Length: 453
Image (cartoon, rainbow, N blue to C red; front, side):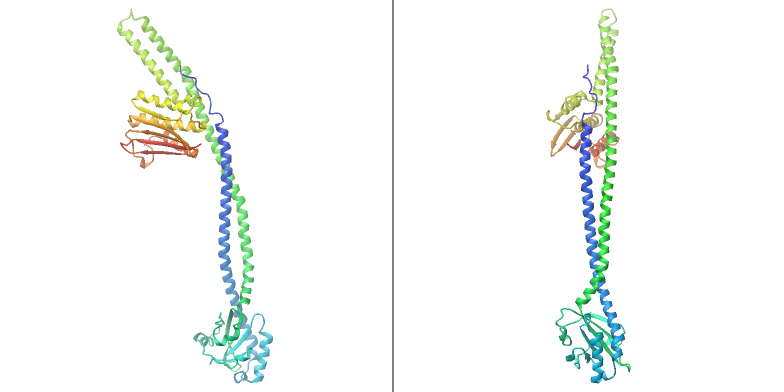
């Protein structure tokens, strides 16, 4: 009689798996959300910093344009109206009227110095009286400015002698623009502005735009974090549903295996065993009276029937190994390896008898060993097979090594038609494990399965 078959999926396997899945998914969701938040924060910072520099540069350029526009308005609208020909001769009345206009309407916080140049490079007027009458050689761009109606702005070179009275300021922006006497003679109107005033104007423009920009980026980040949390939560639910379906499929498969094995064991196997005993007994009873060939035929039939019973019982162990649940992985693998001797294959098992693994892991390792040994018997032509199970660093590793004919594993990892190994690879991935198959023609095959405990 074959031993009674176990009757269920390993107790506690599913709850443990689900509990682990929930904890794992909680960590995954938190980790994914944190990574998303950090990456979003980095992007916000990078975009914010880049935009800040760009906006500051744009604001500075805009402030300089404002300074050019202001100089043009002062030159055309204020100073030019106060000019007369006496300015070129140093007429005190002309100089006094212009000086009064400049000090009342031009000088202030934005303009610290005013100079008016003649085409020869002589300063015909300045609010700094010590400069009036000084003559300095004009640069080429200064000479071109007399005929160019565009206001020019540049950082002043304070080391030049004509700028000696502005050296108290750290940085000065000079803006010059051509104006004309009533008779049309050209002069150059030049203002000197503290660069700090220009920068302050640029900062006001910059702050007007940067606050809404940064606020919008931060708001976008804050909106995306709940979205990321929601997406990972939906992914977790989808994964849990998939795991439930997989668990139910495995349960259904195990229950169907159990039902088939029980039906075969209680029906066909018992009937064939009884028939074998009956035929053998009949042969013994008629041995003295029946022809010898009849008796021999009955005994052969009894032997064949008994052999069929033995093969059916072997098949029952393959369909649903009772020792796996009752005696553990070592005993179940020992049953598998022991069957190799009848096929002329020497089997060796290296598994600790006291090895204690989770039921789900034991079932997966046994199924991988069973499929590998089945392939060895059917396809490899091997003479030796070694089955080994080891645990280290929280993972269990099964290896099945044979010295058979092998195959080329470089084109897909399993020989053509070995659908069982492909299913095992899928099961391994679903368990966060990995199935590796290494083989070369004439060099045997190694099947390795590694899964977390």
